[in-house]
Amino acid sequence: MRTHGFDGEVYDPKFDDDRLARQLGRVWSVIQDGRWRTLREISQQTNDPEASVSAQLRHLRKTRFGAYKIDKRSRGHRSLGLYEYRCDGQEIREIEPTLF
Image 1 (cartoon, rainbow, N blue to C red):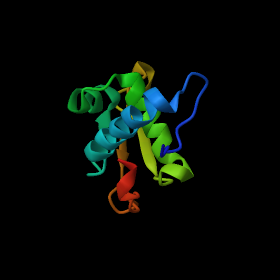
Image 2 (cartoon, helix red, strand yellow):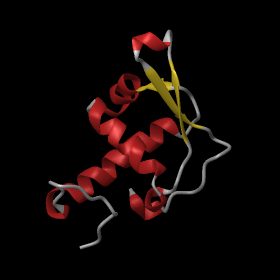
Image 3 (cartoon, helix red, strand yellow):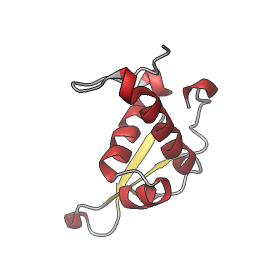
């Protein structure tokens, strides 16, 4: 069985590998245009939970998933604790096509 490099305390490749790879692909397909989006906005476009979107953004920063520069900034007043994310199109490197 081919694994995509996911890991974690409760990760089981048999149950999680393909699901996480597809989820990562959905998140990537949304953010690769460089537009700023909150976790909720990405979640609404992918139909994945916000916590999962956040985890996939962290994965995309890792070398084994492309070492992408995922920018983060406050949306609105910083005291609100709302952030938005993007992957700047000029910083994007090709992801291995078989990853998704």
